Image (cartoon, rainbow, N blue to C red):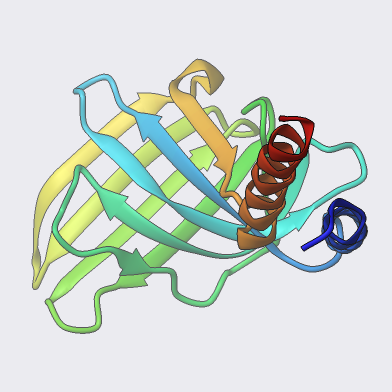
Length: 167
């Protein structure tokens, strides 16, 4: 393939990727570490707002303390908000695992200052966490989109082609 053709293809990918950056939901991974060393991890699906920090959460999936199975969120009871810097966090929910008799209720909230998890199996609680919310214990990162990886690959191919032509 000619270098000009590769450049045009790369340019089209960049236009497509930049147009879709704020269009529609994106996926984010998050992790919160409690005083006990237990962790609440998962993925958030939401729309990144124009401030490039606030996420309006539409759905999420949780995993408490590295259980073998993730727990999908139930219906979201109210608008859920997160921020990449952790300063604003309003995630609450109740999730039931569809195979195992396990329920997970939790709250991470900068507004109330609470961070808690109740993990219940059948009718007995077997994990309880109660902390004050600390934004320093929260990590949220955007999950790379496959189109981004394609752009990187095209860039590497173009560099290799240019080096081959220069030789």
